[in-house]
Image (tube, rainbow, N blue to C red):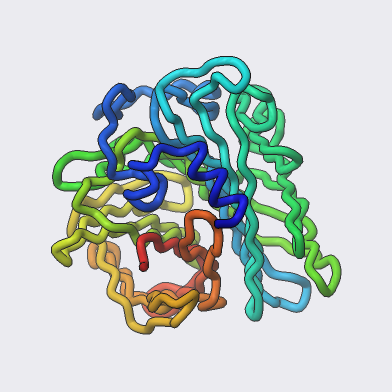
Amino acid sequence: MNVKVLLLFLLWPMAALSQGFAGLGTDADGFAIPEPDPVFDFPSDHGPHPDYRIEWWYLTANLSDADGTPYGLQWTLFRSALAPGEAEGWQSPQVWFAHAAVTTPDAHFATERFARGGTGVAGVVPEPFRAWIDEWVMEGETLDAVRLRAQGPDFGYQMELTAQGPLVFQGQGGFSVKSADGQASYYYSQPFYQIAGTLMLPEGPVEVTGQAWLDREWSSQPLSENQTGWDWFSLSFDSGDKMMGFQLRQRDGSRFTASTWIEPDGSTTPYPDGAFRAEPLETTSVAGRDVPTAWQVRLPDRGVDVRVEALNPNAWMPLSIPYWEGPVRVSGSHTGVGYLEMTGYE
């Protein structure tokens, strides 16, 4: 067992590990549970919610250099609680970990960090906004304009992001239902970032520009115990419209889906279970798993019928909790770019 996996076992309850990605289907006794009709309080809600078991600040970006070569970037900070609340020092029940990645057409780089809450090594402050673990940082006076940096053994990046549109609330006003049993999360996004900066790759620095998407989500049991993983899409079309859609795979082979259509001005239309459809077209053998890396994605109410294809099918995150995450290209009824995340593929 490597040191990172050993640390994960020391910091996380065994029940959570046995349930897969962050133990999101395990019982949430003692933790706060999301309720319908949330009232958000900003900038406070940009910060942590320690009475909920799991939370993330999840940024992905589609980038290109001066020659048009495409790239992808990920920066994610997670908070996972062993118990509700906060305390000083090593008495803190909060565990922080982070993932960073860069994807090129020919390579995928990924790394991770871990920290215990209460020690100052990791955390989030809502105003001025600062999210960090070690020297990995996302920070700015507000969430509308932030600087971003991370460094791994073989890659790194320094970026500046500026929001060109409003926050978007997923589901019903930010209450995002995840199962027929009613499991849910609080979920909002900033899908309108313009991003520019430098990728540090083995062959040298690369100046890039593009668009980025931040997801903010917190809950205590967002999955049903009968769900095994998810396929999540964030798509930015050349028309200026955007779409978030996910399907949660159930043990009986069925799917629970949800989607949000986002207009260029930020107005939204949420769609319930069954409206969004995603069917795998091609699989790739990666890390000993057969993972779908080309999809047919449909949202008939908006005339969406597109092929979503990985820029690099080998964008596997070989971390303590393994999953697939990478940039995608969109063709068909709509064209554009986006990101795809897939968990639970064994």
